[in-house]
Length: 473
Image 1 (cartoon, one colour):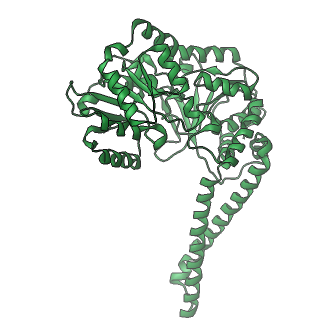
Image 2 (tube, helix red, strand yellow):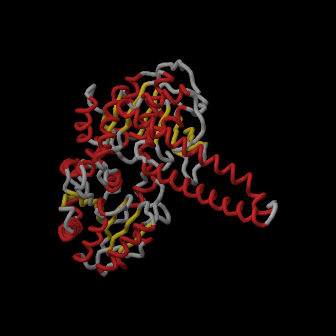
Image 3 (cartoon, one colour):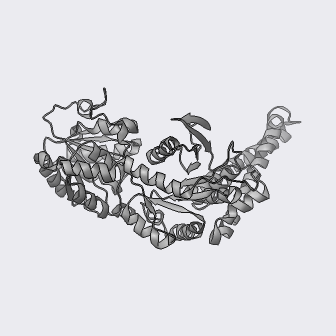
């Protein structure tokens, strides 16, 4: 089977957990991801064959490959086709300019017949060089701004790849990978699974109206060609059932793989020790990407104003601008010395790393339907680390707290209310420690073993047909 995702692949915990589960179930798993700086085109990762392809590639493809890639875009086919022609013409012009400059370089500087000719050639050379520079800048800007074209280019590059084997099932993670999955299924007869990590039309920050309409139409057109759909929470299943219509999507939550839990912080990864804190110091834990306001980490930092003596450890992937942004807020609140920015750790030790905190907090803001329905992996990671939780008072998080009973929901928009919830949970930690029934519910309903079983059952129903390729590139 093929697993497709529009990132490097191995960095995506959901993708890798599923790939490992299917590998252990006897499937020959090939993961096709995105070639990004620092990643290899080909590697083996945990027994999984990983291959990576670029988003944009100006290489020529056969008319059949182009037609197949375009055909899956339904109502947006003309839009994609026009954009593709314009970008390819610009790429051709870029190559033409580059060739001219290479031919003229020596003549301009070393072989001018006389001073006047040399001056003319040099001036023309500089003019053409600037033209090329401008064109390259325009092309790069177009690649980033032509939102919808990335879906097509990824699909075209995928199906023009020379595969070492062919799939019987193609599992597309997120919408960016789905056009390629559908196009490849047309060439191989493979069945298609769409795994919606997000509600695509409701991403954060909100999409402009034209992009949202493109996504809506693309989903409706592509969903006619998929065999199964997977989502991360019940609310997303309800949302997509209205669009998919064939059947209710399969629920596979973002639970951590609890097979690797040791119930002890790994050596060198005790967040309390890393933060330089004593056992008596109240320690709040936030894990996951930081981003800007939508994740509410700024409000968690601001809540420290009302929590003298409490410290906050932030563990997760960040870009420097996010650290700078949060540091400025912490400095303004007078609590920078109580905020600890820790490095990410591998997924297989993350849960055990979190164990030395006192309270886990997740303050997603209700800025989109995607956030309102969020049931993020960080929630499960903190729960399996036995941390009592303070969560946003949103649909899925509220349901989780009611079911498991290991924390409270709070007004995620108000730093004072966040502080009140944190203090209450910290001072009543025994009350919010998982009870035997809570542990049983967490393990039975939310463990990766349960999610893996659903995944395996779905694959078993699809069967394992032999794909007879019509013709590959």
